[in-house]
Length: 311
Length: 264
Image (cartoon, rainbow over all chains, first blue to last red; front, side, top):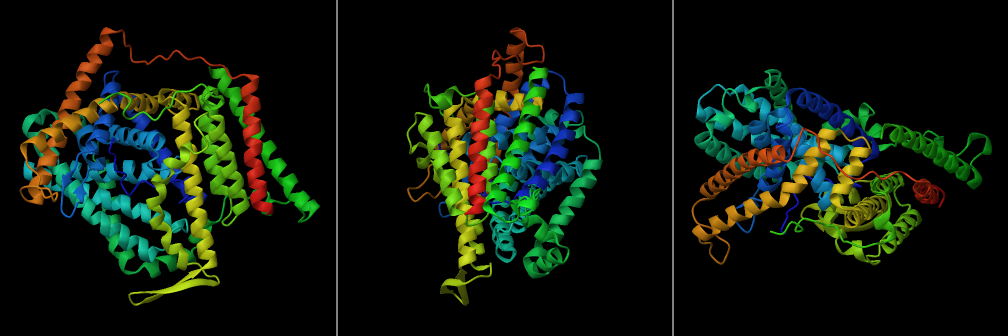
């Protein structure tokens, strides 16, 4: 089975623990909102629909078209999913796609999945849906144009977030990673925009009811327009700024202690892995390690107890 | 396409295959976390982690080198980390001229780069072993038991179930396109890139409509078989004393790797 990894899937080992915990926290908050919304609004019928739509996004990522010199255009699908499924359902579908890619194909790591979900499944949806929602009552041409711009921007936003995460983790130099990632994805984004517009034009022609007034894509509120516009604006302003003045951005982050925070570990509960009264001896490290093991063991037994009670 | 085209499971009756899937999922994540916690340049600890991984390979009955063959999938991403080679202060190891810049590779930079690559390489192998020894539905079920919200695990199981059906559909669309438009031997297609992109877009739209209609049919079929909005699974494996013992052993191994990483 030919299956091409998209350069936005971060493997395990490339992000620092702090950065990936922050990404998980943001992703979990957004997914929790998505889950509570869909649980409230969806009937039993929607569950198979969302599952098959997630499979659709996966299969659509296989579609390609030759561009030039052996390269080809591909679809990431976040913006398209947001427009045809509505934002909350699209977030869950994209999350499922990224989870299967990471779990089954090792395309993207397991521990960094929070970051991958955020970069490819959440921010793409917010931008894609937010911008499109703002133009939903306009003419067909405007809608398609806005959808195209939204698709391009969503890819750029994903690339920008990925570069920032790599930089904050101390894995890449901002001066190199930002121009490289944004440059490549400015081109990839064009393919994304063209396929998204083509797909929407086709759907508008054959099944306009799926994108009309009463469809799931028109149900969500106008708050999305603000969210989409603000994040898009941030991407539009930050991308050229970060490409042009990476040193400035680096200095700002350094002055505020942001870099140090991201690159040091949050797990040093026992400072330096020694027990204070034993001093800095190998024995002290071993005791500290054992204390750590006991804590983890106690936590996992507690977790297991609550697990058993429920089931 | 056969339904196994996407499957990564290798059927065997080994020690690892028979472990509770919850333990396997948790142990894989714990192993990756342990790699992330190891400091840069803790080579002996990385070696210990590699031995741990090899032992897991050996216990799986798939052969020592099983995960090695597919382990380079994440390596192209190492390109993203190349800049640390010369951006961390340290003693110069090598220097060369690239266009106008004089690039100096430092020992600290080299250690950081190698640590990132080794971490990623070890982690991806354990993930490969997980899917090779655990049927995917069991992994999803384990995720559900480990408190991943039901709606997500249900979507993931549907995605897995219909993945090959829709991938087939996508392949049919591409075959239909290929049979109607000749491609020159140098890979050049007809029309402009813009036109080709529009065709691909129409195909994505077509795929969406077919998927949408299929989901209707699937739902009706499920209703006729008694679907009430809840998916039931026959698999009630209790956690036994042996399982707890296994968790303790695995945790001790990982703790040992961590201690080695701090002390040596």
